[in-house]
Image (cartoon, rainbow, N blue to C red):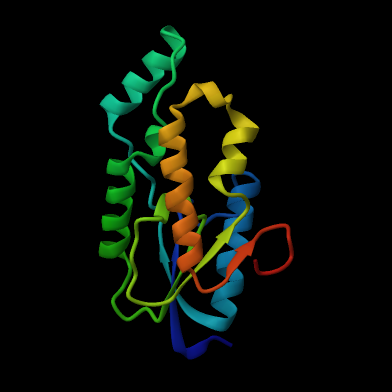
Length: 166
């Protein structure tokens, strides 16, 4: 039975559906488990919308010119937009926020405690997906630094697959 005294906002970029692959199923189950113990607002999906021009220029630089691009999905404009969307969407009576993943929400500055549930940090995803030369080193350092600051500010961080708080 949910705790009637605590309300969480669950912030995610994914739809609340068990279908669609592993990330969707994990997201759905995490929300279902939270609902067993708390009143929970599903604040999502909040799908980041990178600036189209930034995306086009980065792709042109990387794919046509063979030069480093910007990781526009985590551009300063995109992160600022994500933070504004979270601030506008999370209900004011939330006692805490649970963010599914970290980097995309790193500029959110909640006035209540927040928790982070993630499978991997951007640094790990980046190195599993791209070559270092694909993106500007200073851009990646900025993103990694901001994500780290967001993780440090969280009440615990739960890393999927590790089975414990970190």
